[in-house]
Length: 362
Image (cartoon, rainbow, N blue to C red; front, side):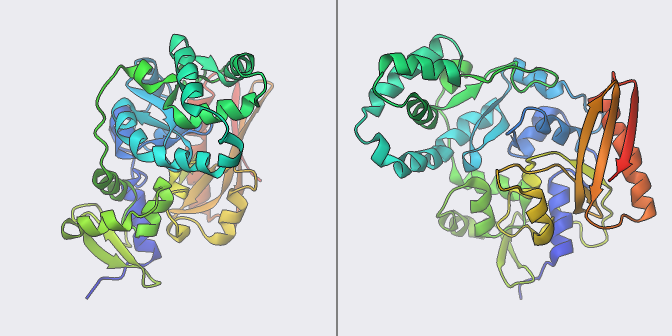
């Protein structure tokens, strides 16, 4: 008989895989690989995501990895920007290229008259000559193909080429326009070793137990049921409260209902909220509608007893940094005190030069 895992059991398993039941003494690169990358739509959230998961994490640690080319930012799962290790960039981009190919197919009517091979080859040479911003690339494309829409051409190039955002973009405390070069130019030539089997195994290690639909939601890929079926003999199965079949690695942590979950501040766009078709294990549908905006922004949230309980943001001005916490429901006194304490730690890490720090409940 298949064991049923309720919402709370799945929550504790997810938090354990996501390094959120306790802070781990783990190097940043190891954590980035364990999490199969961190979504990086904005430069700073991945650094806060690592800070909330790792013990004694310095916010410039991942920036050093980016500067040393041991980690990088590029479009991967779901066709979104991720911070990943250099090794994972090589392995994951061939697998996720199909997502971008599908984007191109959806606009075939606009692109069908173009020789995209020629456009891509020409753009590759420019981007490998030196990293360039989208604005620069559009201007150069407009010179070469004056009768075409340069924005459309640049978009097609971004879909066809494995582009890396080069530093200082993505380094904590740095700013500036995103500039790109190709993955091969940034890391050097190498034979990638893509494996859908490994992709599913690693997803389960970071987000399981999960259904086939959950894996597909995270990856942005389809037909992964075939992969899960192939892996079947090495996986264990459960069912959720709605009768859906869940798959998992046999030795992955499943702490159970009694595991304590400390309060945690989760940054914008964190994969914790984005990597399941059924997100009930971490956020209710009512709260999801408040966190996920119509223009694609995923707001920063905080966890109480392991579940999303509200949103947060930091306002800075006149030398003061204030963490504003917006609960969706009343916060019990012990958790409120824990949020204030954790919030002051967050402010000390993110705004060490501010003259004063404060935490306010909105």
